[in-house]
Structures are given as C-alpha cells and as structure tokens.
Image (cartoon, rainbow, N blue to C red):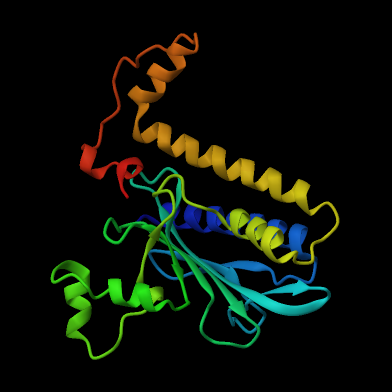
Length: 246
C-alpha cells in the first residue's frame, strides 16, 4: 500500500466512523459514545473509543435503565481493486447488563466461505441441539468430539444472507426496537431508514460489480438501453465472486 493509498483509506474510514456516530446517536441519543478510526497498519479499526483509547460498549436502555449494550467493531481495508472501502471483519455483539457472555453475535469475515462469512451465533442452550451437534461421525460434529467439552449452540454459524446481502448495524437496531422496545431518540426512524437505504444501495452496487452481465440483462428487461464497454473490465472467476459465496 502506497502512502497516498494509506492516507485515502484513513480518510474513508474516518468518514465511516462519522456515519456510525450519526446513526447510533440519531437512534439511541447524543450520549452514545463516538466512533473513531484507528490505524492498525494494513487495516483501520472503527469502534466507539473514549479519550483513553479504550473501546466502549454502546448502552441500550429500556424504560430509562441500561439493560443491554452493543459491542461494535469493524476492521476496514481496501476492496480488491483498491477503489472502495471494504469491511474485512465486523463484530456486533449484544450483551445483557454486565454479563460477559454475549446473547447474540452478528459477525462478518470477508475471507471466509466455510463457515459462512456473514453469520449469527446465538448463546443459548437446547439439549436437542447439543445432541445433533455431535451426532454425525464426520465433518464439524466429528471435530467437536475430539475436544474434551460438550458442544454448545453458540458454536453454530447461522447464515444471514451472504457477503453482499448481510445484515447491517441498522438491522440490529431495528431488531432491538421491535423485540425489546428499547428507548430511542426523537425522529430515530427517519435517521435509521436513511442510513439503511444507503447501506442497501451500497451493497447493491457491490453486487452489480460482481455480476455486471446479470445486472445488464435485468435492466434491458425493464426497457433500459445498456451499452457494452469497448474494453470490458477484467472479470473474476466464479469461485472468487463474493456475491455467490455463502
């Protein structure tokens, strides 16, 4: 990475941090900790960080009392062509009060196909699920049997839409409001809807870059005129296209 590329990456990550601050403060209130972008070398960490450089959780209140919190962390990098800011890893963890074990973990790993890069892990227990997790004599169940511990439901990676259609922080905030009636700021829904629309459009653009021929066919079917470029851009092999990854 050149010095100019590193500087541009820092500027884009700082803009992303500002967007996350505007989103969380617009939904949860102005006392929500500010996001900052911290240079980690090849990647930029974007998290709520206080003046002492300590990563803070985002408080979530119900009826005026803090019952939940969100641990939010992104690691940003360049995309494959060094044109757009990409997320290399994202963690959005939901905690109950001061209990260290999270309730839910929404996670994303850009390089992962197996387990799926975008996944949800639920920290709970069902005897039936623990039984199924070690039933087969091959694959991950067999690997679990090598350890000296019982399998847990939280070890399961539940797929959530793939690399391009994965949930965003906005989806998690909507989930918390819908299911727990969390406290929100005035006009929170306007802030959240605008941010969610931006996220979905950005991911749609990424999906179009993954499969431009499919996008062109869809537009022609709607009556648009689509002109092929004189010099077609280089194409990835199907195995490398993230739109098709689990």
